[in-house]
Image (tube, rainbow, N blue to C red; front, side):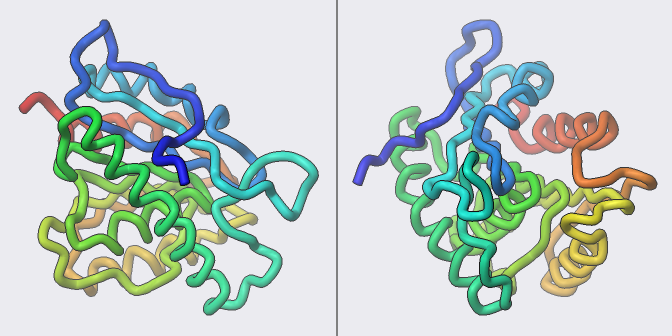
Length: 217
């Protein structure tokens, strides 16, 4: 097993020393190049952050292109939970290796995801008792109950389009409800007429969330 994450990287801005790590987890059928274009804009908010958009470990089994964090051929809750658990088990040691490489702790890690990547980001950040600095989930869902006793529960940004036909907005509302009931700090924004995607408002909210979580020490 290699401890590296394969995928595009950007930053830190202006050649600054790396003082934070932001992971961008893509959706099913895409790869890391799908999200790395967010980095230059968000990098202005957190100029010391290194952005990494890793390619998911599996080829997409629903198409002849792209990658996936886990299979969607069986969408029963048990299989989906098993899939996202396998994905986070694959990611965790690689993230630990990166943090060690740059001399950072979990308090300097933020994880963002879109669609299946958002599901994976939430499971990753809520399933490790060490926590992280922030979770940003766009057009996602919560596939497994969060741990209620994280040492450092991260603030969570949920953004979802009300016209999303791929991951219905009800999945985002259910995630918000479950997270709030577990005592997590959640900012949830539902965008009218937005389909399965990220709009300028979501991008601005993401920049602000990263700035709050990973601003200068």
